[in-house]
Image (cartoon, rainbow, N blue to C red; front, side, top):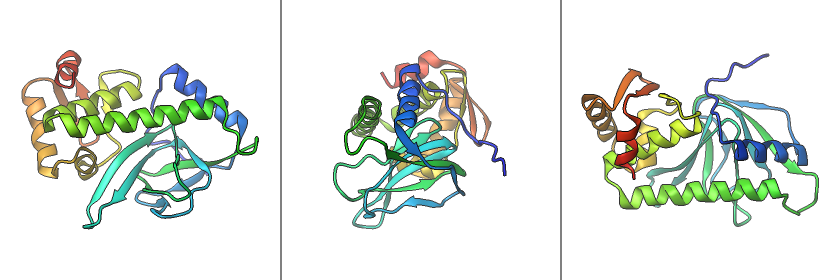
Length: 214
């Protein structure tokens, strides 16, 4: 059955090239479809293959000791996830909106390829950037940083597709659901964005949005 992608990002050329090289160097499995909310791997599972997002969006989450969920990353089409420093997954991965995933296994023993190292570094850089967003910025600045990031990952155009729900955004930015809605209304009132639909935002003033997260 043909599955229509619900969200496909356009990535910088070097990252797309790295993903293409990785697919050539490894043994990609057939695409497995994970419906909305389905678990791809659980926190504490043994780390195994890497995963390539063919279409859709994946959230990487961790449960705190008091049972609260924290989303540490979103991965979209063309990106690889599942990198771990140890033998177990420190987080769990779920499909956000219905995602097609390929498991990747290496053809070259345990020796990492250059493209694998490139994608691992990109993943680490995104994690570090997210920590900076959470640690140094106001709620408004965090939202601006997310919209700028999604815009860049989707080709830099004015229209930004939000595959995730408002509660996902809240858990990713470390704010409340109500704060997410308030900030989006504030950006709308300032004519920085237009809320075209629940899952689509048009950036009217890209420069103002970038200034908020500079």
